[in-house]
Image 1 (cartoon, rainbow, N blue to C red):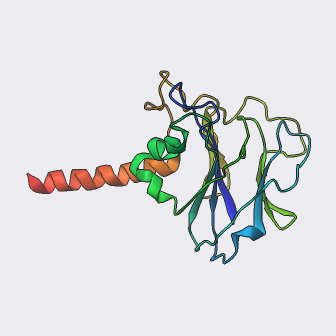
Image 2 (image 1 turned 45 degrees about the horizontal axis):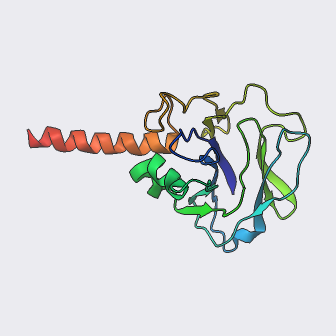
Image 3 (image 1 turned 90 degrees about the vertical axis):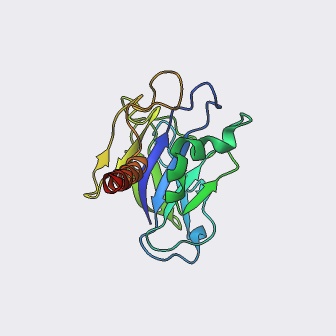
Length: 191
């Protein structure tokens, strides 16, 4: 299991201010018992809080897992399905935590635990909060080479709504590109 991304997406005024917070994981092998794994957000740095949220269920190798928070607005439960649109189904497992987790605010390191051992992380858990709020109203996404794609603060905020983005989360872009290519292919062959 590895961290793939950390999200603190801009929810606009149409949603609760706590919508848009999520952690994207990938199962690297079949996992019969996800409860062996847990997550933590080291709010404002300063050291690990230890495991804060324990996963449940099982996963197949390659599954994309989205662990997300549902805010307090009437439509909060729909935030991620509306944000990702048809691409929401690219996450094989979606876990609405039913709690205030994840609670990062764009500058907080994240840890993935197996048992009590940290097996993956984003940011310096033992340092202070990350400078520049690298994923406030934005996201970070792990590249294939293990480095992090960090578009920067407010990369997801644009015109006061959540429907226009200056920088989209990569899982959304990949699916949109393949859909576009499929549509172009159909259009070309229909001419």
